[in-house]
Length: 530
Image 1 (cartoon, rainbow, N blue to C red):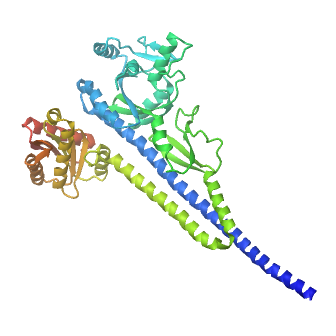
Image 2: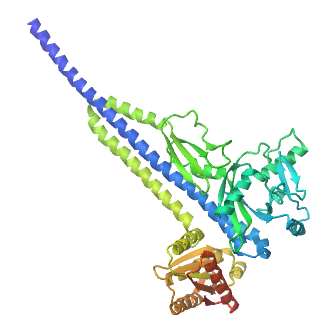
Image 3: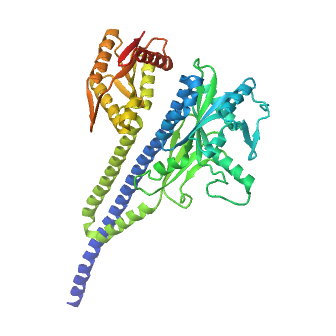
């Protein structure tokens, strides 16, 4: 009896042990599978987010390039006598960008015209002098160009501040800057510099060192921190065969990093590094690096941000924080043991749901940002950036179309008499009426201020005549009521049908002339150019 009893007891202990081992093996297998799923999902989410954020960073830089390009168009499309109004135009441009901190107009100066140029500048500002900076010292020009056939001198700047005024008269003699000038002159495309010290900071540092080389003041940057980025945009004459100047936009790199990079992965903890591979970046290739980058370990993803003349490499490194969280999940599953099969279903479903939620939020944010890039905030119409893309596409496809320019008559008086809030309502009022009168294939844009533009495929003069009459008549006979004020708006409209030998500039010029004709006729009318 004792022998059989002992065998029965041993068998009873052995069965639970086998079942326990089977459950343990299944648990280990399931933990391994879940661990692989977590890693895959985490990698997929990070890759998708990294790609989207690299695209958003490129779009923000390109948006600033477009803003600076609009300032270049101001100089190219207007006569030199009108260049004194640069500050008004630049105010709107700089105010439209969070990262663009100043605009500089660099005018072409040659040995032949330097005397007249200097005389004209001194007429505007008696303190004006042409100078450069070498070895951290200001050197005034001595009449010799040091082997250069032409220099580009800062002739105007916005915003006007104490430090910015010191920049007037500056020209660069560095080989890197000359390379940018030569490149934009040849390619006729904007160039983006490497990260640089902002010139006004450098001048402030020079002034400060001249006064007291040992002391330090909070409002000066003695170390000339490379916190800026320069975007060079060429300006050619109307024949497009001579570069008459360069518009330089000064961008604050910290805005890019703070507004985009630090919030890039929507709550996923990640380290980020941005490397510049373009010309001038050899000594300081790293534009931005998270504080914990060197100590962090984990998966690293690299995405390229391609700009007109350089490529940025954006590296995302996933830290170990999330893996520790997953490890605790796996420990909980292992402790659950017997109910592991049930937990797997909910955990996988939870993780997939998290992935879809993050993907959906990223898509929503991406669409919102893309909408803001291409739309006017006030009227919700397509903006100038969208206009430039659309009209370029029309010429690329060699389509015949009509370009229409619209101005609200005496819009400044509306703002002065009724206030800017009422003026905004007038813009919305006109945009809503005109949009409602257009065909489905027509496109309405707000280019800025009270300036609107329509691109239509109607090219028959009679059809255009009827269309523009209807727009003028409807707007002029629709009352605008806002609070206790009410007025009737009127429009001046100019239109030009594209020709085979037209390009964007010539067509816009003909359209502007047509607009001027309608204003000369007394406003509240339209004129169609031949």
